[in-house]
Amino acid sequence: MQDDDFSLFRSEVRGVKPIAHDRAEVGKPKADRTQLAGLRQAASVRTGQALVVDGLSDQFVIDVGAEDELMWRRDGVQESQIRKLKLGQITFEGSLDLHGMTVERARETLWAFIAEATRLEVRCVRVTHGKAARLDGKRPMIKSHVNTWLRQHPQVLGFASCQARHGGTGALYVMLKRTMLEGRDE
Image (tube, rainbow, N blue to C red):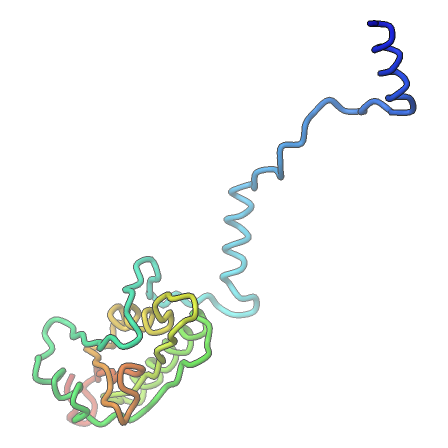
């Protein structure tokens, strides 16, 4: 009976070629960490432009809800000033809309906008970030990032959610520092 099994086996494997290598494939190879770090660095630096380090960190983004009212003031800023800001009693002289932007694009645009407002000695601006009620149930991304970035920006004295007529919880009044020009004070 063993001969029958052996001959049956041989007849079944007739024409089969043996495997040329003796190693099993266990998935894709591990990525080279130093090469990955270099690729990440290259991706973050635009060719032809100087690298701008804006000091705004995304390491700990403060997660906020679509309808959450935001308010923050830097140490030393009077609470009454932030109350006036929240009530819309400080006129904003510039406005920025970040709707539809990626987080990175919103960051660059916000940084440039604040730099220009500061250069022009603007006291208050409006930043519209939107509420972005997302289908996946997560918190609004741009709103959360803007809330975090403005707290870190050295020119920002404070901010508060806008009055309904100016965008409500989808926008912020932002109070900026001013230098001592033409009798203006910080």
